[in-house]
Structures are given as structure tokens and as C-alpha cells.
Amino acid sequence: MSKVNCGILLLVLLLLPVAISAKSGVQDLKSMKFGPKEAPQIIEKIIEKRSESIPELIEMLKDTEDSKRLLMSRADLLKEKYARITAINLLGELQEKESLNSLKVLLLRSENPSYIFNSARAIGNIGGLKAFKILSKTLIKSSASKKSNSIYIKKASILGLGLCGSKLAVPLLIKELNDHRNEQVIRIYAAGSLGLLGSDKGLYVAQDGLTSSDAQIKMRSIQALGLIGNDISNKDLENFTGEKTKYSYRKAAKLSISQIKYRKMKTGEKVKFLKEILKRYPKRATYINWGMRKLSKMKTKESIKALTELSKEEKTGYRFLKQAARIKLKLNK
Image (cartoon, rainbow, N blue to C red; front, side, top):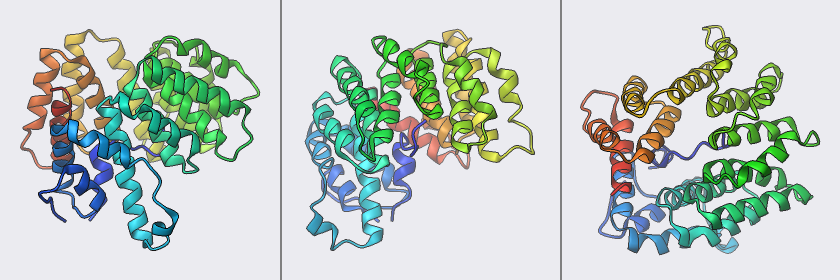
């Protein structure tokens, strides 16, 4: 649901151009000098040396001095942005509570939507009472704010609350869902986050968005229905799977249908289903994000076995999938 879909630790990094040094993994990340083969190794190195990496990753959340930025090329500024987003997401994946204050500052003060959304996502992934308090207070502040970035902060806070896993977020999200002063897309974000928390209260709000002429609203509605997971939505979603439908809608609808199907399964069936679907779509970032997250959170013998098997796949075209599985295994140690 984020504006920049960067929960993909390695796919973001794979955009960047050269070699791993003897320095720490975070120093390699900050150097911005690496390619597709080296990027996953850098992430694994950071995870393996977690205690050393955390302070350096948190340091990366701070804004670069304006005087230094003026001397940087446009290409280097873009590389710095991707490296920083990766640091943000790594802290979330590592569930590093020490980073919460720094992530809060970035969420509240940044003017960049990418940093806003990824900070909120990381806070949500870290979870716990402190994370919930940060996101709930930020949501309330954003609702009253007149600042230009307040709409992004509001969307991001709603997203983070869904990921946070706390049922304390449900009343807050229902309030946003039912507030007709909110833009439609805000209400759809709330519907999706309620779905993440096991509530289908936003089902009809998400369904209504499917008929919108606004591309963003339509896409967020398709995605929200997958998160809500009610099979009453299948017929509506199937209308977006035809060959004449816009590819991005078709792809999102198929994932949402898979998510609905998954929700009805027993635990043993879920592992098998996720493994099969990941092997069917080994290059699709959305499937890798969703499937790997689900397998990783299960923490059962079956899910660990599935991750291990996926990390050793030798077929052509499985590189992204293998790397993601290997990273999730390291995170689970």
C-alpha cells in the first residue's frame, strides 16, 4: 500500500552500481558502490553483525548536511536515497526498538514521501506499545496539521498501524474509515490496515473504490481487498484479471485473490501454498514481499524448511527469490 514499495530490501538495492570491501556492511551500503551481485551479500553481512550494524544504520537516518548535498551529483543523491531507504527497512526487519526515536523524527519531519512511508512501515514492523504510541500520536497530529506533507504522514501512519499488530489501533482506524471528511483514499488505507488486523469493517469502503476513475483509488482498493481477505470480494477482483485489463490492476488483483485464498487455509496448507506461489512468480516483488513476510512470521519447522528449500533453488530466474529467502533465514536466527 505504500507509495514507494520498498519493503523489498534487496530489489531496491539492485538498482545501484561495484564491490564488497573489508569494511562493515553498513559502510559498504553508505559507499553506494556495489552492483546486483554484491547487494544481497552486503545485507547479509549487516544482519550477521547486527550489534555492530545497528548504531551505523541509525546514523544513516539523519539528514545529510545541505553543504554536502550541494556538492553531490543527481545520480549520487538518488543512490544516497536508496541506501537510506534500505537502512530504514533493515531496522524494521531487524525489529530494532533502539531506532524508534530516530524513525519517529524522520516520519514527522521529512518532506520526502519515500522516507515518510518507509519510516512508518519500519515502525510498524518493529511493533510493540512504543511503536503503536508513535504511530497513533502521529496520526492524530497529521489530521490537525496544515503542512504540505501532512497527507503523506496520515496515510503512512495508517499503514504503520496496520503492520504494528496491535488491536489498540482498531478504534483509531475505524474512526478514520468512517470519517467522510477524509479523502476516499485515506478511508481505503484504513480499510486495508483494518484487514491486516483481522477486521473486515472496511470491506464495503474498499469495494466502492473499485469503480473510481482515479487510478490510485482503484489500485489501493484492489490491494485493500486482498488484505481484508473476505472471499465475497473474489467476483469483483476477477473482473480485473482479464487480458484487456490494465496490467498493473491485473497483477494486483491476482495477488489479492491469492491472499484471500490463503486466509482460509490451515497452517500446513498455507506453507505449501506460499512455496508454490513464490516459485510460480519468482521475480514479482509484490509476491516475494508478501510470501516471504508470511513464511518468516510463522516461525514453524515447516516454514523454516520452505525458506531453506527456496534459498537453494537452482532454476534460472530464481535469483531474487533465493536471495530473499536467504535473508529471511538470517533474520530468523
